Length: 461
Picture 1 (cartoon, rainbow, N blue to C red):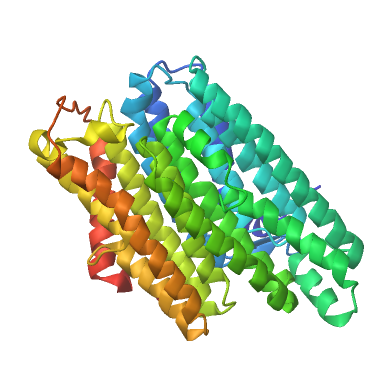
Picture 2: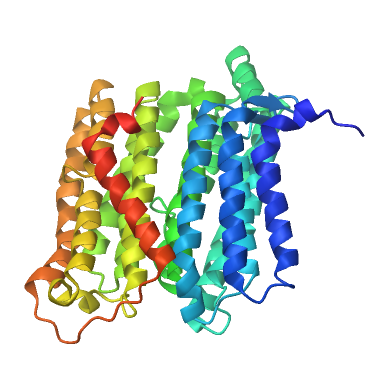
């Protein structure tokens, strides 16, 4: 079968990413220096970034759509990939887990995310989801001789498989009701016919539950703390941004398009999930002593804030969610980069007296903590302000009041890190493990946190 090149043009970024991942698997047999593989991975990501603006269009009968919406999320995925590779180089070597397939799996996972963001069909969406999921299951357990890593991988795999099964069941129901898996045709059929409401509602709920798992929303968050703690820290950083962004990209497209006519139903469901997610994430983060677990619950809480951008069902609120997701990528990966910089940085007590022994490192962590709270002039403030204003304009002032209360609660556990660094006596001097790639990642993230915070027009509009 001959497929014209014009039909493949919208798929160019995904093709480059997938071929690069396969190429890295082959090169891994040749090169002993895994840093070369990492460099090739970054070059591949750069090539994809270059081709994304030129790949706008759709192909295969609308099953794959490359538009401004998917392009924005692909930008987040590529940023996430490049920063993860940079923070991985020294860390994976230090942990004796420098396997060549590690970088291939990062590329495969990113390919799946890109496919999800561009899916115009539920089957393509599922294929992208599985490519991402299978790659991330292996990444979590990449430290083969670490019991915690293996345990986290098994938990993630079992719960992830369950969520995939729910998604398939939801897709099968919607196909039975509409005889199509095309997202736009589903919307058209549902508008024109009197489809039985109960099966349709069940289908929507199953799809919502499946993606609530991917974004670590309550009560489908059980996997996140254990997986974030057990996985290698660069993988934790990768998981905290990539799958979450992919999940939100799908929720935005499917709920705003296929289930647009059911907005009254899914709004109620998402409001409940958002409030629960903000509550559980912020409250349980307070009692954590491991910073990776604390950031896991923080990530759960941020998913709740982002859901506020979906709930109003307006283009302005959706745009606010997208901006928040990009900002979250920089500030969260930045925080994990500092955790990696410290040779012993997984426990909160490891940060005691850090301002005296390493004032610059403490100052950088301070910036990321302030941004995660949402304190101006950091990017985190811009992200939350946009989300809250879009919700207020749509008439959800009461929901914003709840979100502001939980933001105030979040300040407690973020500032506890700051208190440890600046107001607690050092029991044991922290040892840092600097490297040029890690330093570059920290520089990029801290600059973006300030640039977006001071000049929000860079990402807004």
